Amino acid sequence: MNFRNRVESGQQILIAEISPPMSTSADEVCATAQRYSGKVHALGVSESRDHVGMSALAAASLAASQGIEPILHMTTRDRNRIALISDCLGARALGIMNLLCTSGTHQTLGHCRSARNVSDVDPVQLLQALSEQAAGGALIGETAITNRDFCLGAVASPYADPMDMQIMRLEKKLAAGATFLVTQPAFDMDRFRAWWDAITAKGLQKKAAVIAGVRVLTSAEEATALAAARPSPCLPASTVTRMTGAKSASDQRTMGIKIALETIEALSSLAGLRGFEVRGDGDPGAALEVIEKSGVKV
Image 1 (cartoon, rainbow, N blue to C red):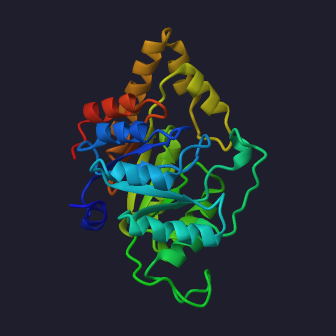
Image 2 (cartoon, one colour):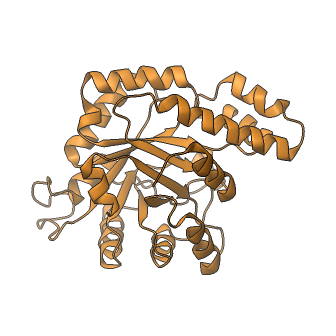
Image 3 (tube, rainbow, N blue to C red):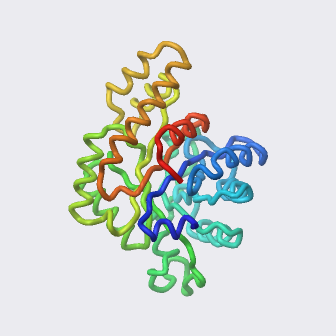
């Protein structure tokens, strides 16, 4: 069963996410993809999220060559509509049908702060252009895209304020054609449950497969930096204390894995949640250990 069929079937979903390397090494991407093959239903491939890396489209194609189905992140931050649509069509020609439409983290929050923000269109408009629900081709000209056969997803933001506005934006993404939603990494369980109550009150979890993001913290330095970052990931002080309280690097990694497992256990009680996306930034081994120990089956 491919990822799209699983989304539509209502079954549980387990995915992982990788960031392409700051290199031209195809072997590195293939080796990482091989580690996840058979352990997840699909592999998200982010697009220069935390650093300028290899083309996500190239990395997704390399991942697919290793027998794992990729979810290509399409970031509206860096390209205009011409380039975005062109890459989407190229992805489909290469056999990549799963697209996650996202605005991306603002460049001033990363290492390439002098880069110009394009943002010609937003994720909702991109979804509209790619979805079978799109009316006409106003976004890209007079002619609509033909043979649109994408499995479209979007990002959900449980920790962004004001919450009511975020829920409205989520509704727009669903109306535009998103069939699955991946949340930002979950750390603060109380806030996540409040957000979950808000979306389930509107029945949004029945309109798309909602997948909770789980980021595995692997060092006290990572936890401290993330807690200080903006926009806030709502990393509780108690979590930072647990990470910084672990003395050695090995102990900190072990603690991060434990916290991630606790997160999955806590979120598993939410009726209607379809699954998890596990990511270990820079440490796929940690993500794989969480996947194995969580008991979530493929």
